[in-house]
Image (tube, rainbow, N blue to C red):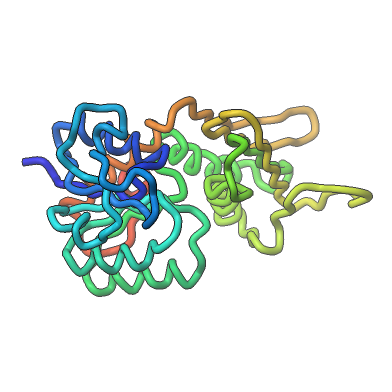
Length: 268
């Protein structure tokens, strides 16, 4: 029997691909489609908006209506994350959350829900390849040590609002964890002017924006005489969507708690 899923932000770019992939899945079914009040696509069929056959699921701004038939919720949209998560938890729904730039207060609120029985996968990037990159970046940093300077470069489309990307932050955190660095102290965001020679422990962070780039991330380890680069390039949003759907299936048999894609993929 398929798992009924509600998509939050169903009319957005990611939301439409989530709807399309859920409709093609043998393990999942579309139970609801939520959008913000005032969206011009409210009342439209979610499948038709996603470019598929009609799904008999109307896009709504009513949280209770969108969650009425769901057992799982996928949230990539920004805004009202905690309010939606609380409503989903109250109905016993598992949650896959890929929203980046959550505040410490919002993260704390999600953690509180898991203490009350909620099952949540929270990840800055749902891509299987990117999560392997997190693992490899940490291992490389640990093995190479401080003899290698670390720089992180990310590029996204010209409409992305936040910088650096949540994925780039997670990559820096993986390096910090592996080498005993501190993100707030050791990460340097871009360089301008007479900044002097880089320190041994700093991690350079650089954000590029342009065109329709879905997401490119590179971690550079540079030493005298050689350079190692670990790169992931996403050419389709479906890479994130398919990871999110795997996370939904993972939570179906999981205990209450906060998980990430490393748990889903068995990389821990």
